[in-house]
Length: 283
Image (cartoon, rainbow, N blue to C red; front, side, top):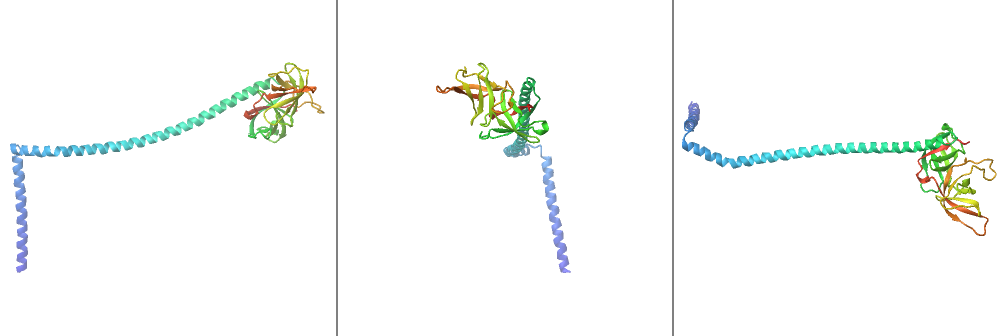
């Protein structure tokens, strides 16, 4: 019973302390409410506010800096995304521009070949050059037209600038062209101005040689050499029709003790830059 009495006494004491603290806080709050317009209270409040202003400004500055930093990060990310998008568009436009330019070049080349074809009394096929020996050792090229396009062995191949060679091998969709510069190539030829005749042979390199020109014939540097349309040796006919450009005389080799002279001829066609050709169905 004594323990129970002590517990009740302690509880009552705690309750009484809580009531006192509450009453004290209530009185202080009531006093501040009543005295809030008093001069000393206003001055104290103003002093506290003045003391807190620098801290508030500092906090505001920190907040503005954090906000600006966040916005800067967002702007950088947006600019990176825009830059990547612009790069992608630029790449696509570059590819499209290259494609259109190549189409334009191809169209121009084919138009020039069509003009040449219209002046020749032969059926013809336009074909792209699909392979060549970059070293120039093999004097042949492959073109993208063959038996399916009606091409036969012996057909003459030309460009808008002159003779390229003749077809030496035919596949279903491709043909091999023996270039006029190959040492195995021989063509009967005429110097266009003086009508001097001779045989044009290929040689290793990018030039031709015109042989069997009589010493009495007038041949000069700059003269144009064309096909004569005559058979060579025991051939019954020439592979090449008359009047096709072979090239231009760039040098003369005179031999005083010989009945003949020869001329070095630069081909009219730049065979290293050949892209499209015209195959004449001469067979």
